[in-house]
Structures are given as C-alpha cells and as structure tokens.
Image (cartoon, rainbow, N blue to C red):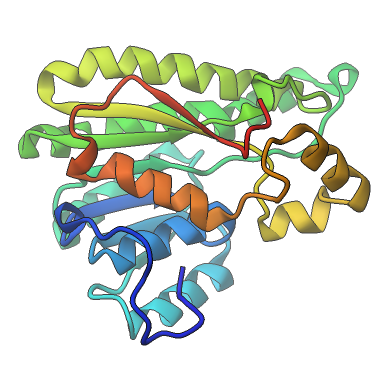
Length: 263
C-alpha cells in the first residue's frame, strides 16, 4: 500500500473511525492478507495478524514499524488450531484492547481433483477454509459485545460462482462462507455487530503469479473480465477498509464481488 513517493499524499480514503481500532487479520503475512495488514496499519489501527509464514510475518512488521502509528503484532499461529487462536485472541485483547474488526482472510486454494478427495483431505481443506472462520467469529464475540459494536469481514471467493473446476472442496467452502455470513449477520445484528463477505476474483498475488497465473490462464481471465487488467491485492484491501469503518455502519448481510467484472 506504500506509494512510490512516500511524501506524496495518498489518493485513497482515510477513515478516522479506524484510528486506534483493534483489528485482527488472519493469513496476514503475504498476498491479500499483507495488503490488509498494511492498509489498516496506515489508517492508524492497532493491527494483529496470524500466519504460519514466520519470516514473511516478521519482515512485514519490521517494514511497517517505522511508518505506521502502531506497529502491527504478528502471531505465528495455525488458524486450524482452535486452542492456539483462542489463546492469541486473549493476548490481543489484553495488549491491544477488544477486537472490533475481524478479517477472516486465511485459506488454502491448493488444486485437487474430485476423484482424489479423501475424507481426510476433505476435513483438512474444510478446516482451513471454513471451520476456522466460524470459530474465529465466535472467538471475538465476547470483546465485540463488551464494545457494543463490531465488523466481521469474511473472505469468500468467486470460485463457487464461476464455478471453478479443479477445486471442488475449496469452492464448496467458499460458498458456505456466504451462507454463514448471512446467518451470522442476522444472529448478531441486534448487538450492533455487522457481518459481510468479500468475494475476490483472480487477484494478482505473489502466490497466484507463482502457481497459477500462467500466460494462458491470464489470457482466459482477461477474456472473461470486463476490466482488461488483473486486480491487485491493494484493491481488495480498500474494499475491506470501507466495510470495517463506520462509513459502512448501515451495511451488513452483504456479499461484495471484486473481480473486474468476471462474473
């Protein structure tokens, strides 16, 4: 999110309501997650993030520590380890205050064929792509209730809308996230806790470029998108900032597609 000229003013929105707000981002060390951490840090939020990529997480903290009003806090944490995430949430609440914004970003889009899916693989992929999102929502609820407000943003995907092939369990989980989001929005709305989903398309992350965005696949994506360019992680982060800020205080139970007009 850092501009090429650090002294130049940002052309994008600043949200005063996000300043000093405690934010938790999962999968925050790279890709969309790293852009989320940086975006919130630049807004002056107190950001904590989970990831298993120790080196990348520490490097991100070091890079942002000199420029952000509050240095982010990195937790080397497996989001599928529910006991570890509960302990980390308790530490965040003690050190940074009750979590007012949760961004459920962590996931795993490893390709898999339908006839190769075993019960064990199913459970593993559902654990990282769906189950942990539900229990992280549950984990931040006591703090949001103490605050009397909160915003939860669940990262889904257009994978189930296209629909994608070669990722049947992942696509199933991402569809379920939208259903979970709508249910939780109605469960928690009376407590002033908002729940929305963001559905990215083919985002130009380091991982996607390394593993999937071949010349042929990129050409296919651009042929189907209305916008003839790849969407950047920073652009996803700016949508999430809006949904976290008080500017969107009347918005809940919604799913926002950000895919350049793919679907």
